[in-house]
Length: 343
Ligand code: SAH
Image (cartoon, rainbow, N blue to C red; front, side, top):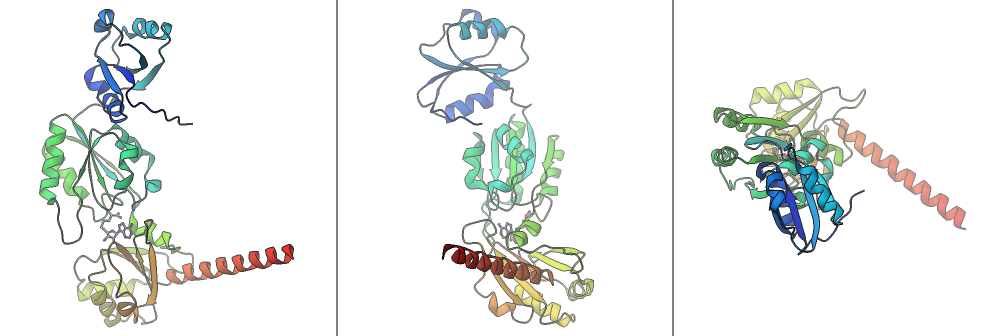
């Protein structure tokens, strides 16, 4: 159970060494409390408790000797809330944020965000929900296609400088950091600067966005493999042939700009024009939309589609259609049964 209490204007005393207590201090300040600090049990011997103290946050900083002070508070009727110390400062965690909804963040991602001092986030990550998940400073380094807000090398520089200054840095990226996410480069930049760096895998849009449209990327007896391709630049003729020859599902990220070349290339490579194809735009976000056509008709069917979108080529697209038809038929039956029962 989670309680939410309005702390605006309330006196909160955070007891704990400055490094261990830094996140608690930021969190209570962000909640509007008037924060008082106590860095060591020795200081506690002489301190006058602030008047009308609402809460003491006792950070478990490992210093011996807090017990007497906390006992004194409890005896005066002041509630004491224990909380874990902030993690060691000065490292970077690359976090996969999933396809854009907080529901698809991993538990490890939520923990890393909670413990962060600074979060550098992308537009594809679930950034709107960040203020609920962390009290860290939030820095938008998001990029819209074609508009590089902060260059990749500047992002790396910012992350490294911030961690070297002693912050717990989270780099929150859309999907998984290692799927077309330049995660490897960011890790290399941290390692080169002598920083500790961790990677928290995320739910990639390559699988989850088709799923949002009911499309399984594999399905027994329909497709036993899937290939994830970047459509950032047009594929070569050889790549079109390899893909068409594989016979599995093809998932394309960043593929709206090169959709026409891809469809034409796969046709030249011998893929059937009636191969089903789907474009799933804005998965898990307002305005999610699925356009279903086939290889021969997709270019005109998807003329109004825009990024972010995931393309799916393969028979699995029909599985979604079949399931949708079943679901619609089941809903029709439910409605029929309800009207019969009602009459
Ligand atoms: N690392 C990310 C991919 C980054 S490339 C991941 O693992 O998901 C960016 C591309 O991801 C977009 O152009 C689009 O093709 C896809 N994408 C990410 N989020 C999406 C969403 N919510 N809906 C549709 N496509 C999305």
